[in-house]
Image (cartoon, rainbow, N blue to C red; front, side, top):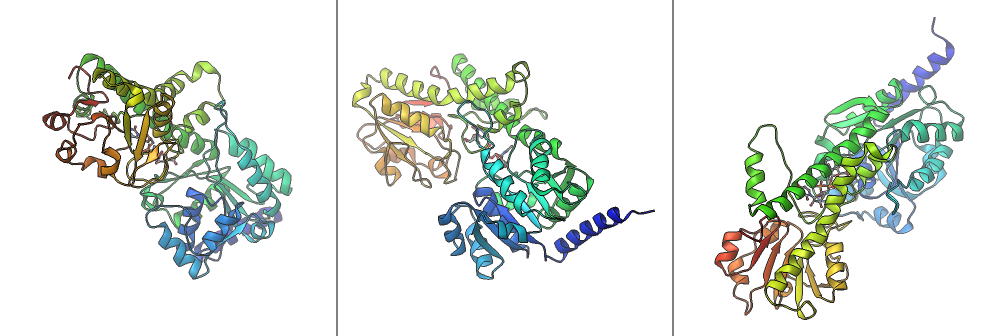
Length: 454
Ligand code: SAJ
C-alpha cells in the first residue's frame, strides 16, 4: 500500500521533473562570479527563466544592462541575448527571488584563510538566504568547491533547521561541482562529464534531470564522493606539476634539459608528466589541495602539502635564476631594468588571480630593481610599471623573465630583439623560446630546467 506522504513526495518530484522538461522551472543562481554567471547564462540560453543573484549592486546593474562583468570568450553574447529576451535578470540577494525559485544553484566563493584553513563564511551566508526562501519541492544544488562532507554535515542540517523541511522527502539537495577552465569555459561546461552527487537517490535524480539539459554527459554519484572527486582532480594536477617542477630542478643540477626528459618519459604509454613553470596560480589549484586535506590529521597529508610547498617555491627560484644571471653578467641589481612578460596566471587568459607574477615582481621591487611588465590580456601590474606593448617593455631591458606562456610570447621574433643595442638576458620560466635560436642570436639564455651548464 502506498502511504499518503509517499504519494505526496513522489508527486512533488514528478512536478519538479516536469518543470525541468518543459522549461517552466524558475532557477536562481546565487553568486554571479565567474562560474555563477556562466551557469546562469547557460541555463537561460537553454530556455529557463533565471535570476542571477549577487550581493554587489554594481554587478547586478551591469548584468541587467546586458553586459557580462566576467571576461570569457562567448559569455558576453550569451548574457546580452538572454537579458534582452527577459530570460536572464540579476538581483540583489533577496528573499522574494529565492522564494519564487524552484531550483537554486549556490556558486559562491570558498577561499582559504592565511592559515590555509577553509573559509566557509560566504557559503554560510548563502545558506541563510536559501534557507529562508526554500519551500517544499525546491532543488538546492551546491556548485562551489567545498571540503569533503560539507553538503551532508553543514548544508543539509542548516537548510533543514531553517526550513523545518526534510531533504529527500520535502526538498532536494545535491553537490554538482564545476569543471571549467577559463578560456574555454562555455565549451567545457557543456562537454566535460558532470558529476551529480545527491544526498539521496531522489536528490540525485532531480539534479541529474536538471543538468542533463545543459551537459552532454552526467555521472551520478553521492554528494561526498563528488566533493572528494572534485578536489582530487585539482590536487592531482597540482601534485603532478610539483613533480615536473622538482624534475626541472634536478635537471638543472644534472645539466640536462627537462623538456627533453619529459618528452621522452611521456612516450611511455602510462606516463603523463605536466609542464614545469614559475609557480601555480589561478583561483583553484593553489587552494583546493588545502580543502582536500582540511579534515584530516597531519600524517595523512604529507604529499599534498609537500607539492604545495614545491609549487610555492618556484617564483623564488625564478628570481634566484635572474639574480645569478645578472651577477654573472657583472650587473649591479640597483642599476638594472627587468622586464616581466606575462602577469596572467596562465596562457591566453586575462585572469591574474594568484599569478606567480605577483611574488616575482614584488620580490624584484623589494630588491630595488626597476621592473616593467607587459601582458597582452591583463592590466594587472603587481606594482611594476606597465608597458603598452612588447617593444616598449623590452627596450633598454637588462633581463627578460617569461612568466606566462601566452601565444604572443611564443611568436616573438628573437632576431628583432637581438637588434637592441644591448641584448637582454633571457630567463625563460615557461620555456617558450628555443634555447639554440636564442644563443644563435647572441642572447644569454637561462631556461627553467634547462640547466646553467647547458
Ligand atoms: N600549470 C603549470 N604546468 C602545467 C599546467 C598548469 O605550471 O602543466 C600552471 C598554470 O600555468 C597555472 C596553474 O598551473 O598557473 C593552474 O592552471 P590550470 O591549467 O590547471 O587551470 P585552472 O586553475 O584554470 O583550472 C583548473 C582545471 N582543473 C584541472 O585541469 C584538473 C579546471 O578543469 C577546473 O575546472 C578548475 O581548475 C577549477 O575551477 O577547479
